[in-house]
Image 1 (tube, rainbow, N blue to C red):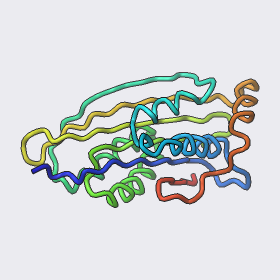
Image 2 (cartoon, rainbow, N blue to C red; image 1 turned 60 degrees about the horizontal axis):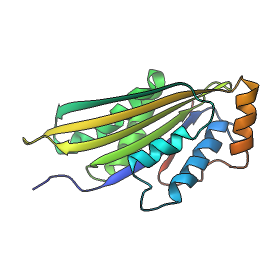
Image 3 (cartoon, helix red, strand yellow; image 1 turned 180 degrees about the vertical axis):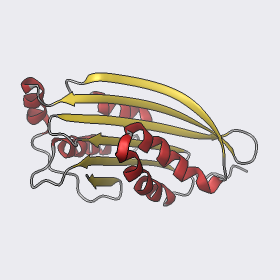
Length: 189
Protein backbone atom coordinates (compact mmCIF):
# COMPACT_ATOMS: atom_id res chain seq x y z
CA UNK A 1 0.00 0.00 0.00
CA UNK A 2 1.28 3.47 -0.86
CA UNK A 3 2.17 5.26 2.41
CA UNK A 4 1.42 8.71 0.98
CA UNK A 5 -1.62 10.76 1.72
CA UNK A 6 -2.66 11.58 -1.84
CA UNK A 7 -2.38 15.33 -1.52
CA UNK A 8 -1.15 18.10 -3.74
CA UNK A 9 -0.32 21.45 -2.21
CA UNK A 10 0.64 24.90 -3.38
CA UNK A 11 2.13 27.89 -1.55
CA UNK A 12 2.86 31.51 -2.47
CA UNK A 13 5.40 33.50 -0.49
CA UNK A 14 6.64 37.09 -0.65
CA UNK A 15 9.85 38.16 1.08
CA UNK A 16 10.40 41.87 1.53
CA UNK A 17 10.61 44.79 3.92
CA UNK A 18 7.68 46.09 5.93
CA UNK A 19 5.88 48.65 3.81
CA UNK A 20 2.88 50.99 4.12
CA UNK A 21 2.07 50.40 0.45
CA UNK A 22 1.97 47.04 -1.33
CA UNK A 23 5.28 45.90 -2.77
CA UNK A 24 5.36 45.18 -6.49
CA UNK A 25 6.10 41.55 -5.54
CA UNK A 26 2.85 41.43 -3.53
CA UNK A 27 0.85 42.83 -6.44
CA UNK A 28 2.37 40.28 -8.85
CA UNK A 29 1.73 37.48 -6.35
CA UNK A 30 -1.90 38.55 -5.94
CA UNK A 31 -2.41 38.58 -9.72
CA UNK A 32 -0.87 35.12 -10.09
CA UNK A 33 -3.06 33.75 -7.28
CA UNK A 34 -6.12 35.14 -9.05
CA UNK A 35 -4.98 33.72 -12.41
CA UNK A 36 -4.41 30.27 -10.94
CA UNK A 37 -7.76 30.38 -9.13
CA UNK A 38 -9.64 30.98 -12.40
CA UNK A 39 -9.73 27.23 -13.14
CA UNK A 40 -10.08 25.27 -9.88
CA UNK A 41 -9.68 21.96 -11.71
CA UNK A 42 -6.15 22.92 -12.83
CA UNK A 43 -4.99 25.33 -10.13
CA UNK A 44 -2.45 22.88 -8.69
CA UNK A 45 -1.17 21.58 -12.03
CA UNK A 46 2.58 22.39 -12.24
CA UNK A 47 2.31 23.32 -15.94
CA UNK A 48 -0.39 25.87 -15.10
CA UNK A 49 1.92 27.45 -12.49
CA UNK A 50 4.83 27.50 -14.95
CA UNK A 51 2.69 29.14 -17.65
CA UNK A 52 1.36 31.74 -15.18
CA UNK A 53 4.89 32.67 -14.05
CA UNK A 54 6.08 33.00 -17.62
CA UNK A 55 3.36 35.59 -18.24
CA UNK A 56 5.17 38.08 -15.97
CA UNK A 57 6.69 40.50 -18.53
CA UNK A 58 10.28 41.58 -19.13
CA UNK A 59 11.98 38.76 -17.30
CA UNK A 60 15.74 38.82 -17.21
CA UNK A 61 18.08 35.89 -16.49
CA UNK A 62 15.23 33.41 -16.88
CA UNK A 63 16.39 29.90 -16.09
CA UNK A 64 14.83 26.47 -15.93
CA UNK A 65 16.42 23.43 -14.32
CA UNK A 66 15.09 19.96 -13.64
CA UNK A 67 16.55 17.25 -11.46
CA UNK A 68 15.54 14.08 -9.66
CA UNK A 69 16.70 13.47 -6.11
CA UNK A 70 16.60 10.03 -4.52
CA UNK A 71 16.25 10.23 -0.77
CA UNK A 72 15.85 7.66 1.95
CA UNK A 73 13.99 8.95 5.00
CA UNK A 74 11.02 8.23 7.23
CA UNK A 75 7.79 9.27 5.55
CA UNK A 76 7.21 11.83 8.35
CA UNK A 77 10.36 13.72 7.29
CA UNK A 78 9.06 14.28 3.76
CA UNK A 79 7.40 17.70 4.43
CA UNK A 80 10.67 19.02 5.89
CA UNK A 81 12.66 17.70 2.91
CA UNK A 82 10.31 19.36 0.41
CA UNK A 83 10.41 22.64 2.38
CA UNK A 84 14.20 22.52 2.42
CA UNK A 85 14.37 22.07 -1.37
CA UNK A 86 12.11 25.09 -1.93
CA UNK A 87 13.85 27.31 0.63
CA UNK A 88 17.36 26.48 -0.56
CA UNK A 89 16.49 27.72 -4.06
CA UNK A 90 16.32 31.25 -2.64
CA UNK A 91 19.54 30.76 -0.70
CA UNK A 92 21.28 33.03 1.77
CA UNK A 93 19.68 33.99 5.05
CA UNK A 94 16.22 33.66 3.48
CA UNK A 95 16.60 29.87 3.18
CA UNK A 96 16.53 29.32 6.93
CA UNK A 97 13.74 31.89 7.39
CA UNK A 98 11.60 30.06 4.80
CA UNK A 99 12.23 26.39 5.57
CA UNK A 100 10.40 26.30 8.90
CA UNK A 101 7.13 28.02 7.85
CA UNK A 102 7.02 26.07 4.56
CA UNK A 103 7.57 22.83 6.50
CA UNK A 104 4.79 23.78 8.94
CA UNK A 105 2.48 24.50 6.01
CA UNK A 106 3.26 21.12 4.42
CA UNK A 107 2.78 19.22 7.70
CA UNK A 108 -0.93 20.12 7.49
CA UNK A 109 -1.17 17.98 4.36
CA UNK A 110 0.43 14.81 5.68
CA UNK A 111 2.92 13.59 3.11
CA UNK A 112 2.26 15.45 -0.15
CA UNK A 113 2.86 13.67 -3.43
CA UNK A 114 3.25 17.02 -5.21
CA UNK A 115 4.05 20.57 -4.13
CA UNK A 116 4.29 23.84 -6.06
CA UNK A 117 5.98 26.76 -4.32
CA UNK A 118 6.28 30.27 -5.79
CA UNK A 119 8.55 32.68 -3.91
CA UNK A 120 8.88 36.36 -4.85
CA UNK A 121 11.79 38.08 -3.12
CA UNK A 122 11.94 41.89 -3.15
CA UNK A 123 14.45 42.79 -0.48
CA UNK A 124 15.84 45.55 -2.72
CA UNK A 125 13.50 48.11 -4.24
CA UNK A 126 15.00 47.77 -7.72
CA UNK A 127 14.70 43.98 -8.22
CA UNK A 128 12.22 41.16 -7.79
CA UNK A 129 13.52 37.61 -7.88
CA UNK A 130 10.94 34.94 -8.73
CA UNK A 131 11.51 31.28 -7.85
CA UNK A 132 9.00 28.59 -8.80
CA UNK A 133 9.69 25.07 -7.58
CA UNK A 134 7.42 22.23 -8.69
CA UNK A 135 8.05 18.97 -6.83
CA UNK A 136 6.66 15.51 -7.53
CA UNK A 137 7.24 12.68 -5.05
CA UNK A 138 7.08 9.00 -5.89
CA UNK A 139 7.77 5.89 -3.88
CA UNK A 140 11.13 4.52 -5.03
CA UNK A 141 10.22 0.93 -4.24
CA UNK A 142 11.85 0.17 -0.91
CA UNK A 143 10.50 1.30 2.42
CA UNK A 144 11.46 4.88 3.23
CA UNK A 145 12.95 5.51 -0.19
CA UNK A 146 11.53 8.34 -2.29
CA UNK A 147 12.24 9.91 -5.60
CA UNK A 148 11.65 13.68 -5.71
CA UNK A 149 11.53 15.23 -9.17
CA UNK A 150 11.96 18.99 -9.10
CA UNK A 151 11.54 21.62 -11.76
CA UNK A 152 12.78 25.13 -11.00
CA UNK A 153 11.98 28.28 -12.92
CA UNK A 154 13.73 31.46 -11.81
CA UNK A 155 13.71 34.98 -13.11
CA UNK A 156 14.70 38.48 -12.11
CA UNK A 157 12.70 41.63 -12.81
CA UNK A 158 14.85 44.74 -13.03
CA UNK A 159 12.68 47.55 -11.63
CA UNK A 160 15.36 50.18 -12.23
CA UNK A 161 14.54 49.81 -15.94
CA UNK A 162 11.81 52.43 -16.45
CA UNK A 163 10.09 50.45 -19.21
CA UNK A 164 9.91 47.34 -17.02
CA UNK A 165 8.62 49.40 -14.08
CA UNK A 166 5.95 51.05 -16.28
CA UNK A 167 4.82 47.69 -17.69
CA UNK A 168 4.60 46.11 -14.23
CA UNK A 169 2.65 49.07 -12.86
CA UNK A 170 0.31 48.99 -15.86
CA UNK A 171 -0.39 45.24 -15.53
CA UNK A 172 -0.27 44.71 -11.77
CA UNK A 173 -0.92 48.18 -10.32
CA UNK A 174 -4.60 47.53 -9.67
CA UNK A 175 -3.89 44.49 -7.49
CA UNK A 176 -3.48 44.82 -3.74
CA UNK A 177 -1.46 42.50 -1.55
CA UNK A 178 -2.82 38.96 -1.23
CA UNK A 179 -5.19 38.49 1.66
CA UNK A 180 -4.20 36.27 4.54
CA UNK A 181 -5.06 33.05 2.75
CA UNK A 182 -3.85 29.72 4.13
CA UNK A 183 -1.75 29.26 0.97
CA UNK A 184 0.01 32.65 1.25
CA UNK A 185 3.03 33.38 3.42
CA UNK A 186 4.53 36.88 3.92
CA UNK A 187 8.06 37.05 5.33
CA UNK A 188 9.29 40.46 6.51
CA UNK A 189 13.05 40.87 6.32
